[in-house]
Length: 501
Image: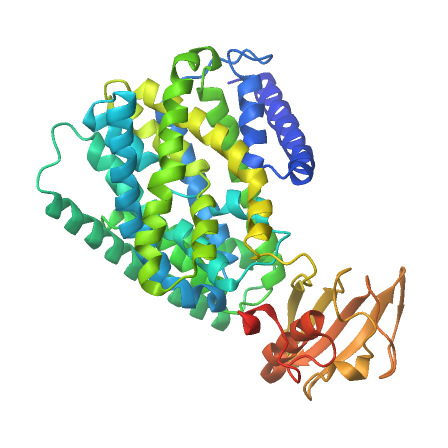
């Protein structure tokens, strides 16, 4: 490759990134998951689009897709709140294992008897489409406050179910029949156990090291955190365990460890996550050939109908009923099983393995993901409101960023009062922050001032709160409680979201 060709490649990549970033705005207004926009960009650049780029390297797509998925899982794990996920771990674990098995079996039966796929192909399709995508779900639900049990279950399930699904797809793609289902089940359990153990070990060791080793520059902490997450994946995969489960658990441990310079780390991880999503979906869009999809539309619609109306609800009911999850929450989680990045990436495995009819399987999965995301995505907020799981008048959670003041042994909390926050009209003194925490600065309409105890807070105010190490968490909890329940929060039994659910 010459320097001229390199310059052309860099120009093309930068333009694609700019278009993709601008497309996020369209996606946020329409309520559609961003994956559809990025897939569309790839299709437009492909052999049937204006770009006329001929790309058919399934093996490269799979490798890049795996790498992108590692980054996406790491970013998701870093943003997972342990206090929300912990109560949902048992139900999410059953849904990500038993639920996956039920979904695979039901979907495979539909693909075999209704579409006519032979059993091997049917089970491959059933396994491929049985993995949910948290990014797709929360991109359309982010504006609706939901019970923490729902969000925690969906988030944990999406982080956990990638591992067993990958194992099943690889097993079904191997030459010859799958003998002795109990041996396959034992292998899945063993790989999950190895991945979980290594992920937790790497996460705890990494968080301990970052807390006790002072790096010379704050910009090194985000790099170190992502390196630790990737190490967990590599260690899990090399030990014949689940690398995907390892990276998710390690990242979740790191994300809840109160590491130094956490806002910078979180922003860095989000940026890498966006780049990974853009690159992965654009590449998957390039791999598909639209004029070949015509014959596979009807089979994809039939399999998708079986998945969304039978397989997914059945897996949710069988998995969550023993935990006494209300039927409204089960109904929402049944419809919220959006498919995104993982199914399309996994659909490249049979192509690389040389499975007969693998190109058709890829086309079916591609059509299924696009069509049912278009149907399910925009209707999720409506369904949540109909089931009375999302209350429009409820105040949004308060976004608080924390920067450590290492030498002073304190933290600087920064936050902006949302438009629907009940902190509006509350005096600074009525916040009742714990001793050792104080509001030191208010920025209003572009002007900053030091508040007095009688200063009345307003919507849009930016607050700077200084808190010592021992009361940092208590101060943050109090701020969240006031934004949800007003100045009498906790006294009247109201408070932050996690207190109510």
